[in-house]
Structure formats: C-alpha cells, structure tokens
Length: 560
Image (tube, rainbow, N blue to C red; front, top):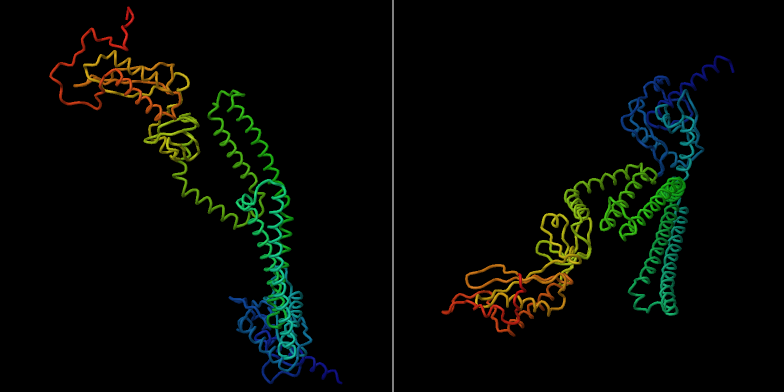
C-alpha cells in the first residue's frame, strides 16, 4: 500500500475517533468503528475546550446500579442529558445481545468507554474529582467494572429461565426464614418456661422466700423480658437476612440486597472500630471516676466523724456536716464530669453537642424557681434553723421534721400526715422550733382559764399547779408557773405554763392537763368562768381575807 494512502487512512481514522468522542461526550450516541457519517467533523480539542462545569451533577445509572457521577456540560448537553443518552445506547446494545467486553481507551486526557466495538460513554477531566484523589485512570477502571456487572444483570433480567430460578431461590429463602422465626419462637417459649420453673425450684430449695415474695419482686418478669428481648433481636437478624437474600436473587433488586449486606457489615465494622478507638477514652473516664469516688469516700468518712462528734471542726457544725458532705460530693462529681467530658466517645460530634445545648437550655428555662429553692435550702441548712427530729410550726403546719432537702422540707404531723413545704415558703414564713431548748432550759407551753373575782387567786394558783402535778408528760424541772394574764371586767385570766417532756405529744399532754384542771376545780368547788359571763350577781365578788388561804392554798412563807 503506498505511503500516501496509509497516511490518509490514519488521518481519517483519527478524525473518526475525534467525532465519536465528541458525540459520546455530548450524548452517549453509539457509533461503530466504521467511517463517520458525511458531516463536518468537530475537532477533539474544540470539544474538550467546550466542556464546562455543570451547575447540577447527575449520576449515570444502569440496571439500577450507579456507574459514575457526571459533572461536566459537553457541547451544550447537561450531565442528565449525557446520562440519558448513554442509557439509550446501552439499551440498544442489550436488545442486540451485546453485553461486552467493556473497555476504556484514554484519548487526549479524556477516556472512551466502549461495549464491544461501540463507544457508549465519554469521560472528561471535569468529571474527575481530583480533590478526593480521583484520577482519570481510576475513574475509567471503576466505570468499566460497574458497567460490565450492570450489563450482565440487564441481560439476565430479560431471560425468563433466569427469572424463574431467581423466584424459586427467593421462595426458598422466604421459607427458610419463616422456619427460623418459628423455631426461635418455640425455643423462646421453652426457655421462658424453664427459667420460671428453675427460679421457683431454687427459691423453694433455698427457703429464702416463698413464691409470693418471688413473684412480688418481679424477678421472673425481668428474666422473661430479657429472654423476649433476645428473641426479638434474633428475629430482626433473621428478617434482615431474609430480605437481603430475596433482594439479591433478582437482577434489578440485587444492588439493594448488596447494599443491605454492605450496610450491615459496614455498621458492624464501624461499631467494632469505634469501640476499639473509644477504649483509651473510656479508660481515662473510668480512672477519673475511680479517683473521684475515692476522694468522695474519704470526705464522707471525715464528714460522718464530724456529724457524730468524733472530730471537731471550727468551720462546720455537726448538724450541717451531712448537707455539706452532699454539697461537696455533688461539686466533686460535677468537676469530674467536666474533666471527663472530652474523653467520652462522641463528645466532639454535632449530635452530642446538640444534646448538651438542649439540656443547658432546659436548665436555663427552669432555673428561675429552681435556684430560689436551692438558695433557700442553703439558708435553712447553714443558719441551722431546723434539725431532723425537731417539732416545729411552719405557718399553719405543726409537725416533726423528717427531711431537710435541697428543694423542700418534709414534716410529719400529729395525724401522721406527710406535708412537703418548699424551702422558699419556709424561709418566707415564721418558723417556731419547740424542740431546740426543750432538753436543756425547757420550753413552756401555756394554757389559760378564766375564774371569777370571788375565787381566791392563791387558791386558783395552787389548784392549777396541782393539776399540773397530776398530769403525766409534764416535766418537774423547770417547775410549772402560774401567771395572771389579765384582770378582765368580770373575771381573772390565769395562765398555766408547763414544760412538756415530749413536744410531739403536746396535744395529748394538754388534753390530759385540761381534764385534771376540771377535776381539781370540781373537787374544790371553784367554778371555771370560761369563756366569760355577762350578768354580775347582786352580791359583790370579793374574797374575805380569812379565805385567802383556803385549802389547798398555804400562806406565803415569812419574808415574801
């Protein structure tokens, strides 16, 4: 063959490949290796220079499999139009029974992807994401591998025999999955029944408790729930496997089944690697928790020694030792949480930060009343206004202090009612403590009677003191005292002040005292004028001097 003819043949072939590249770059039109049609060929350099970055990318997929992400406009055609043209070309090839071989050929910085002898897709340098480390060679090789699988599956989906075999395998997988679910259910019922029987037998043999106590503790119910949770986990695994197996049998749904399997493997791998990566941080958190726990225990021992009086501290009182210990322990754990926060797994993720912000917002919104109650609790604690076991009156409520908390104070009334009073209310009201000095100097409790002017006041004093002597629950030291509280228009108001042995029995002791007062006054014939009387008798209400010391009164000692 003459050299001139060969040169012209090579030039024509080069122009043909250039035109093919321009066409497939623009729309994926399938062309053969024959001479191009009779139209002006476009130079390859012009086609490459005309490729521009697209505003919107498009994923070229075939047979439900993603092949490549197109990012460039070529000859005015968008990535979506290029992908649609390539799919039409592949459909034509599959209709003709051509599914390979798939190959790629580099050409002037671009790449031509062909099926058999036909070029179906062109890749430009703009379709390659160099920022993620991609290259034209790696992208074209990945496209060839994916497209070969997609073409084989597309041809497989058009064969009836293959579809029937896939349906049979899917049915077999469904039957196997249902059998496994049934078997898991049978095993669950058997294991649950045996656990209940074994627990009842163990308790019966050990004689620790009877069966009613066992069922009341909900131990059997807890075991049953644990077995049920394990059954549900196995059911989910079987269903997940069954769905993935069925999807992988059909060519069109095979990518979904493979993605399920890949998702499971990726998730398990990620969890495993995440757990391994979290081990150093968790070890640090555990070390911080152990150190904090040790310090809290040492402080707890010291505060308990102060509370019981074995250790004396100038800056803390025994009654404030317990709340101070709680406060110090809380502050230590808060400090430990702040120190351990950076080492917690996921602490740097946006989700973890979002939860932290949400919790902080909740505390901020609800802190107005909370801070008021907490500060009121500190005021009550460190002012030592109340103590556990004291009998007090807060507002209209009387009772024994059973709990001094950070937010509220609890009282047990004489009717065994449990009353909760917010600390802010306690601080804002007058609180009377009947027990603080009751064991030392004594707390006087008054009761009043009104007696007419015709009764000798010394006799009344003596009768009231005798009634106090007869009453159980009244202390002999300090002695009871009678005071004349007022000289009213028609009677004298006497007050009997007694010290009670137990303030929490005050209503019962006063009831017994009132009964004894009535008995004593009836014995000596003195009328109690309570609440008062209106009509004064005709005779004047005076007491003769000879009657000033009527029994049981006794004359005052000389010198008084």
